[in-house]
Length: 104
Picture 1 (cartoon, helix red, strand yellow):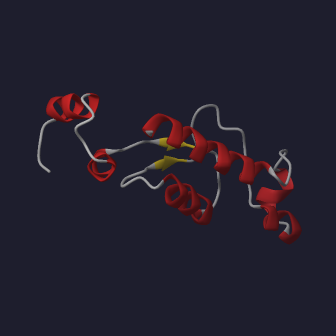
Picture 2 (spheres, rainbow, N blue to C red; picture 1 turned 120 degrees about the vertical axis):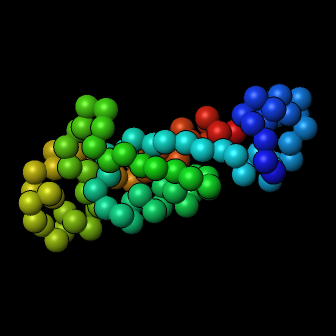
């Protein structure tokens, strides 16, 4: 489907786009303070958007947010992380929830 954004918005408002057509044009940008490529991949997969850049160091960055397994492994990031072991999972879930809310 090749059309300008105004035409797309008009068709969408009129309910004239199928869910598949609408999905084709949905884009979003997420800011989530996660550390790993795996966490970003999980957000992208669960949000099911065609394009989803994820900015990891934005919006008053809260410091290192590491995967639960990193606390057992140790290392610098886990050692200076002041958030709990559940923080990454909560942030990923909230990011996906917000993305679904704004994209329908």
